[in-house]
Image 1 (cartoon, rainbow, N blue to C red):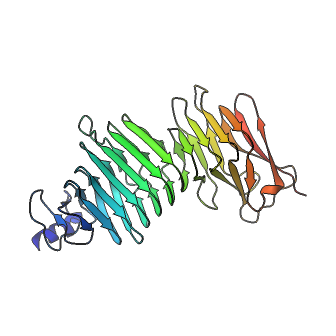
Image 2: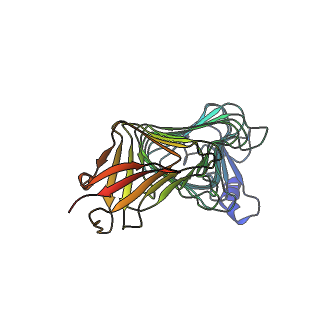
Image 3: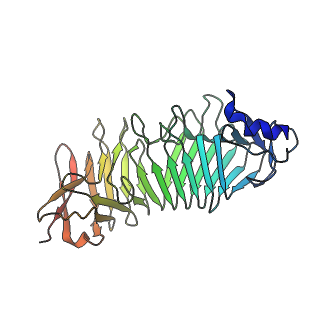
Length: 334
C-alpha cells in the first residue's frame, strides 16, 4: 500500500509522482506501477498530481469512469487509450506521442478536459525538441473534448507526426490571448474533419470541412473563428459541410474571419454547402438587415449555398468584393 499512498498524496508534494501502466485493461483496474520494470502494484491508481504513462508496447487502456491526472503521455509503441461512454478525463498536460513509434487516443464518448493552467499544453506529437519523432493520432468519434490549454491544440511542436481526426462529437478549443487555436508546429500535422462539430476561437492551419459543422462560439452562443497564420491558409467546406450562424442582434452574430497579411488566404464553399441560420434570445431582424458573416482575402463559391434552419428561407446571400471579400446575409422577411 505504500506505493498507493505515494500516488494518492503526490498532489501535496512539490514533485508529482509518476504512475506507469504494465498491461492492457480498464484504467481503474490493477494495471499500474510506480517504477518502470517493476511488478504491478495492487490498488495503485494515477491521481490528480500524477503523470500517467502508457509505456509498454502494444498496450491499450480503456476509460469508462472518471480520472484526473497532472499529465497523460503515450510512450510505448502501438499504445492506445480508448475513452468510452461515461468516461470523464481531466488533465493539465496532454502529450499524444513522444519517442519513436505510434500512439492513439480514440474517443467514443464521454468528456476530456484540458485545463487552462499557465504553461499547460495539449500536444499530439513532438513535445521534446530533437527527441520525439513518433506519430500521435487522436480519433474523436463522439463525446466532448474541451481544450482550455493556453496554446490550444498543437498538432506537433518540435517534430513527429500529429493527426487529429474529427468524425463526431464536439471539439471546443477555448484558448484566447496569443493562442493560435489549432497549430501545426515543426512536424507533420494534419487536421482531418469528416464529421462532428468544431468550435475554436482561432486557427493557424488550413481546415477542410468534409462533413462536419463549424460552430463559432458553440451551440446557441455567438463567437468568431479567426485565422492566425503568417502564410496563406484555406477554409474549405464541402457540400456535406455546414456552418452555423447565430444572430443575437443587429451587431452581435457569428463570424468567420479568414485573412492574413500576404492576402492569399481563401474561404471556399463547395456546391450545396450550407449555412444554418439561428436567431437567439428572441431576436427578430428588420427587413433589409445585413449581416457580414464571412471575411476572407478571397472568397469562392463553387455553385450555390443552401441557407437552412427555421429562418433560412427568409434570408438571401451575396458576395461583396474589394480589399477584403465578404459573405453577406440579408433578411428579406416582412
